[in-house]
Length: 293
Length: 114
Image 1 (tube, rainbow over the protein chains, first blue to last red):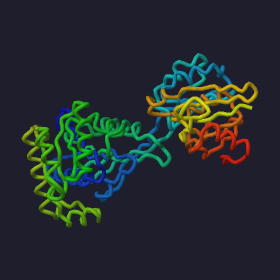
Image 2: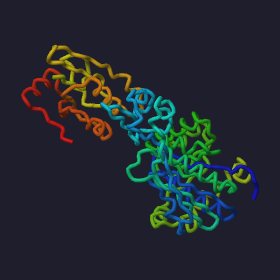
Image 3: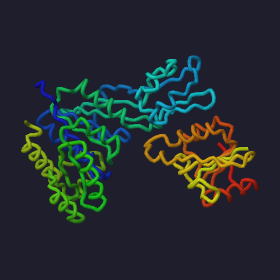
Image 4: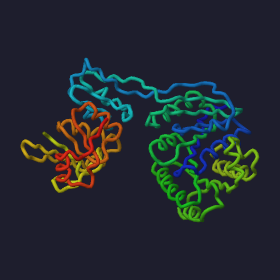
């Protein structure tokens, strides 16, 4: 094992349901034939990668977010905290300061700037991170607690957990949430390379454009994986060509992949179409010297 | 009595804005002085978060006795409004401020019960 920085690949998409989890779990298992892999499920609002690996949780860690805790006795009711909060998470109604945990971004501004020190920060539980070992795969998943509205702090906690515990593992796959909003930005922030999974439908193309724009704004290296590549229209392929966006692999439509996936099995093990697609994907990454550099 | 409206404009002919936090204007009618106070809320469009709580704070600072709106406040704003001594009437969209005020006087608006 070397002390080199791990190579981190984020698997994202614009549109949901294009095959991020299919690709993440199967690619992790495929790569694990030869070497240790971290597979991180950063879709903390509905993690499901663990369903594909029949293994026990080795270690769990409760995760917290820091929230100001109003101290009525020391507060002078000056109302500065209401003005400082950029997220409108604090209001002052009569003689009461109310903090809305779900709006708080833990920026500490109110706490630091309160002249009476009446808003000390306190940890609030937001979710849990589980580490699961299955053969050469080190799976890390986080689950946001029911009722919590912000995925971003838990995604950050998960990335830190991986850094603290599994940095020596050279290949790390991050299964991201769908869309292009804050949780996705947080999930790809650490990545060295991003695979955007899409499908050849009008929705797939529309959302891929948003995802590509996001990656360009973030300055990320990326390539597209087209799932169910032989269905739909050529519009997506044509657009990628026109924009000179690399296509790293194509997974053909195959009912067997879907039925195997639905039973919680890793389809590449029994399906040659998926195995071929993974092989070409790994070759693509290899050519870019991204994985085996 | 002071009556607040979420409104799409700053006069009696304006329609009720059905939105609470992201209403275009907040208009407060003071029955004693017969004056309209108009608060432009357009800056809220730039806010990604907390439009509802910000509006709750704005309304509290104006101390109206009654709020007449459309959809009603969302979950977070509703929590914020709970501690205020204010009756909230909803479902007044599609009415002008003038019509909504008349209906309020006839007791024909829907009172929001927490």
